[in-house]
Image (cartoon, rainbow, N blue to C red):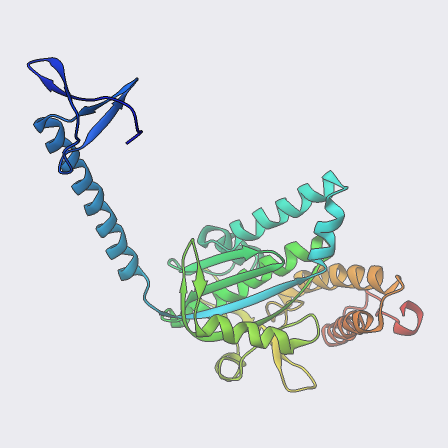
Length: 324
């Protein structure tokens, strides 16, 4: 209570001054004095506090129930060059808007509805997309984390591939490439937070990737290396989703230039190759520090290998001696 202010009790509708407050009573401030609460006001105040306490307990209990580790597949993605682009955007309003729109697109497309749209793009409307996919996405600074339930055995690989495709392609359109790691394990991922051993494992893999590639842990690589069948609406196999490629160092990484194998998907591969080739050439035309240049040279080799393997004769390979 503020000192030197009079204290009153309401008696028969009138103020009656008291000189010592009752420690078991509550008081409210009115203009220039403290007024002791009536019995009915005391009861209302106690009921209100009890309801608040009940709400706090229920919220705490709900959070505790929800904070249970789940088995999930986690992809930790680092957007190379994002930090410097953000710094440039301070002086470039259009760049700031482009970065924001890119994030909106990534977060939207990796939601369930969005990944169905990407699925249709990848497979030209020829595949029956899974109905129920539990995908969550978190973005912070220059990193994006995508996770999905590991209990959805048949759906999790095509769902993850579609999500990765949307992220990588949207960033590639803005000139960014991605490095990342994919791991399976225990994690808690909701709208407010993400943590757990699977996130740590995915982050550690990203740190070992070195080049702009999204590598998958050995256990998942062994399970997924043969890909998954793609079916048309009539139940006929239309091709194979074989999204993992083995690098010379033995690591398997997401083969985003060839998100599906089959003649009908060749046009999509060609479009991806052209996108990545443009980014590589743009970067290698600059005076880059050697460690950064090596990353784009690695991508150039990746581009050239896919051009050769897919017989994309309309696309010239990257000539490293000219671009470096």
